[in-house]
Image 1 (tube, rainbow, N blue to C red):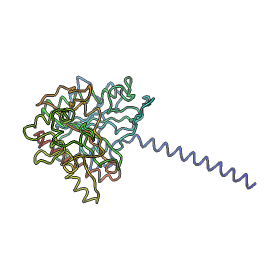
Image 2: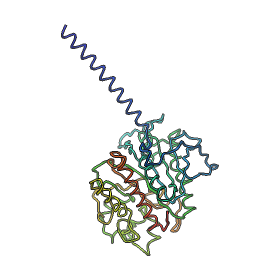
Image 3: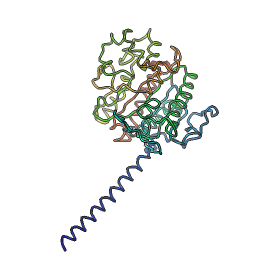
Image 4: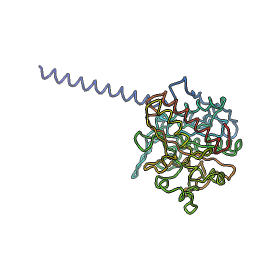
Length: 371
């Protein structure tokens, strides 16, 4: 009798564990649909998307749009009126009926950059506070990376090329960024800044990495070698056209990772703000590359988006949008550690404010545009 009771108890325990596991999985999957910021007091709340008809709709700054011929909300665009474009390719967690990306031989990264949409919303609010309510252009992918990688090319790494997935790729790259945001910025300001916002793991290189399409091996070179035209490091970087425009005032290496007054590198500007956060939170967050950290051993150089939208010379890609020395987009891929993005919403908001300060200072000092 005792053995029978034990068996029944064990069976009940197994059933309870299975039920608990199902509840946990369901809860976890439900949480994956939450993609916008929760700390509403200090952030920008994305409104419901308005249908956008390509070739007909005139974008109104501050309005969120979704292409009317695609699935609503897969890719959304916040129309802006500043010389700043922010893209969030890996922040989405929706899992619609799109085939999962599966690799046959090579590794395919399916890791979502959790809370990068939240960080983008915090950044929008911080920029609005500093520009009398003006908006950056923001393009957000809401689909999980298991289905589509919006920092890869058409069909690359098993990206979909048809159906809902193909529409989402075109909405993100060709329709919203390539056909609307970039032309609007160039038309209004001649030049602008593009930031591809990503998340990185903690304890993998620096806490914040600014990627210019240059590898750690590239960055290991001396300033003299980086400035040499033999290997054309400037041309393959996302500062290609900006460095040409400023050539009489500052050399490429200094623009990339220096602290020359009124032409500081983005890393050096951001680190100045991060130092305040370090003091307030008793942390040691670090940004690379910058004047104090010119030669990082670990670097994330960036991918498809900055190569295409910043006019770099990279393999078969070479200035796809026909930029000139006076009309162009420069930028970088920005990798932010998980701790800043997720651990403390107040920390994330404070970081977004320092990031906004660095963006505004950089745009003023290097693009000669006051936001």
